[in-house]
Image (cartoon, rainbow, N blue to C red; front, side):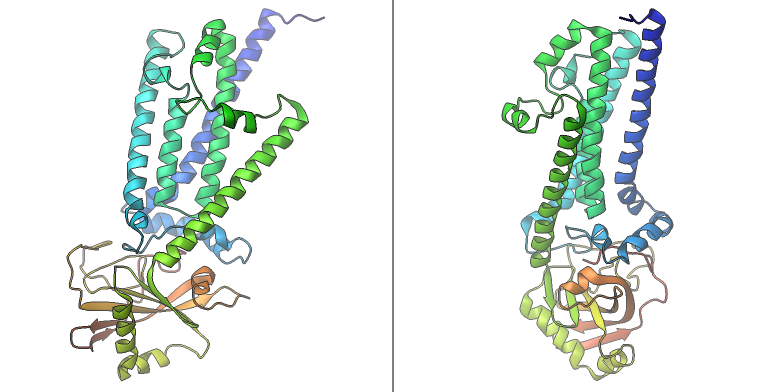
Length: 391
């Protein structure tokens, strides 16, 4: 039997440390990709970042098989819906993001303080409750970003991040066991990995085989089950979101109101606009017989950059004040370019649109049932030809 020498043990330990560092970089890149889209969308240079990132989204969006990855399962453009939860999900997302980032910062400072001053395992503070508060905090932060930017592709990236964090945590624990011995094993017996409570029943259900090919197959099965279940949940949220919109759908068009509006008012707005001969004339000259439309309705003073419309104020960006005239609205008519080989009616228009072409903006006054203004949309707008959320 060959007994490893001290030199062999040293190199084995060094290789494990290098593996751990590589894993940290892999996780860092994955997490960066998860949050990147939302971060640049929130930045002053969003349009430039999105223009570069848009090539990948274009590829997915134009594919009949992969287009669902670009969809959002929660409203993004719409500010008000008939669902109380959907009206505050942005607040929930922001709070989770900030809380998670703060938790990561505190736990990281704690572990590096121990690393450079005490040279022993970190078992104090928040580490008394869970063994990996940094990963737990990043998971919370990632969940917040997912809620703020709820694309299906971001959901799948988030789920991948969960599994990567789990296996990275297991590698780190194995290294600590070798380095600190029984002291760390005793610490493990008293604490939980990510959640500060024992979940014995769940552990019995999801415990993987100890090693070998069976463990690999069990991991693939678990990973697949989690992904399928999460996608199904996202599908339910997407359906709830669509049913909660203040909207009207017919064979050729989807009318989506960004703000709260009664169905009777919405119908009257549409009828007033289409009854105007100048509106009909301009629309008829801009589209063909079988064209589809996504038309946005919003208070006259509002501006939403994802909608191809004229700016309300020179310096405004995403301007949606709470106080507005509920008698005067703007309808932004856009022609929906449907994905090649697809047909769409009603809500399906939202699922199969790859591009919107702005047609006209019509201002309607409900108090006297008149069309006040008809203007051309801008020839160029902020997210022109970039696949942004449609509702």
